[in-house]
Length: 281
Image (tube, rainbow, N blue to C red):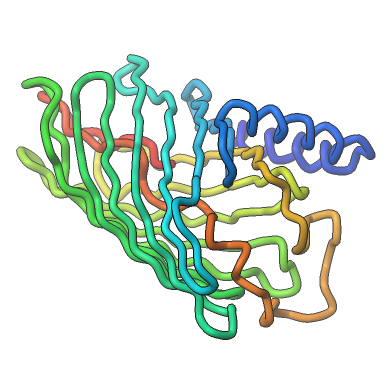
């Protein structure tokens, strides 16, 4: 937990510098060059207690668009750590979203394939519903194949609820509940509670506490900083401070049609001889 608070202190001080926006702009432009094509690109650095940092790169690219709906693909590649061994996980998914006539609400569904370099494979289906103040999403994950006899890919689901923080239009608070179906052991259940902060037009920060409801699995804090391209042309950031109104009620959701799908991108496995849960994205 101490490490996460130190990270937060450094990042918030970073935002106060006059060169913050220029620096983050250069980072986001670099991100866009890593993944060609028009759409949202993101590079993130995630730090957890007693773990090495995880690095990830993610892209969302539009396939087709009309006035009130679109279809898109989302893909990502990142590293993680299990039993002190580095592993790499890739995800590829397809999604479709629908925009309400007033542009104030989005509904969508998606399907994904996850694969790591140990040979573990998993698929998922998910749905989402969101407006300017509230967001709901849920995903169901189904094993396809185990990479070895020592690892068992777990089926499971998660539910994500998110709300804007009153008077802070650039900050959200979220609640994420998850359940993984144990094979040789009890199910793994837990809850994440945290906040997502839009620091600048190019930079997001996520802070959360992961409360794992299982013996042998330690609860932990984590912090994740994300560099995003293209920058947000409209909308508040932390540099705007506190608003005079409690809720951002009339946000046009058109710009969110290519936002990333929120899901657990890291495959959860049960190891022979012990049980563990991977860190979530």
